[in-house]
Length: 297
Image (cartoon, rainbow, N blue to C red; front, side, top):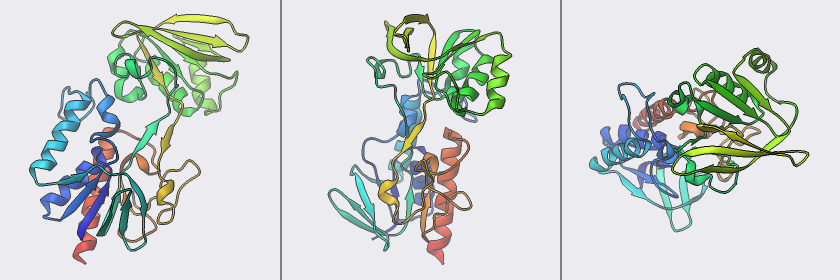
């Protein structure tokens, strides 16, 4: 029997663990793959307060070691269900607790083309606000057609010398105000009715190849590519104890409360406007603090 079970060992989950361990609670962290979450893929983190620059791997490893030094119990098992009595079911075991924090995050949708994984953190990013500052006065491309892609292109246009906005259709589904703002910028070029078919470079991304609807091929020299085609949460297994929005994110009240008492959500798995490292650790600390209050009651 645990005081709290945390599902997910990314920044939100491990921050929850840190707060709970410092409150002398008996906890278990369950993780399907490896600690760190998406931040592991960040070549550098330079927008976290008080840290000038750190690799995503080092940040995640430091946080992992911090909770392990406090005696955190982490098991690498895939969660398949949460019962209403706060029993967490994995493929191997069942665990019981007084409270649960869901911190499973969300995975960025990929292009699913050759060399994509090779260039992650080496010219390929899924987060413009995380990595855009590394491309001062350089040439970048954004792939996507929703509001996130348009916002990313606007953000990068103020940093990079040139921004290519690549979209597979001739119309954008994002907010019109962003599109109109982009049309007024001299350093933004629209590449419409086109899909990225290959990525090329030696150690770092150097070139992207796109194909339009007429089968015409175009090569574009870039220093960086930002993929903004959405994220995919993995919350369907929890729908008996939480409410999900139409995109699969967990609906939370007061930031971290789900519809089921003593089940909380933290990080990218929940409905929120900003998914960043800072907001993930914020959620983690709030969820842990609220769980401690409820356990005391």
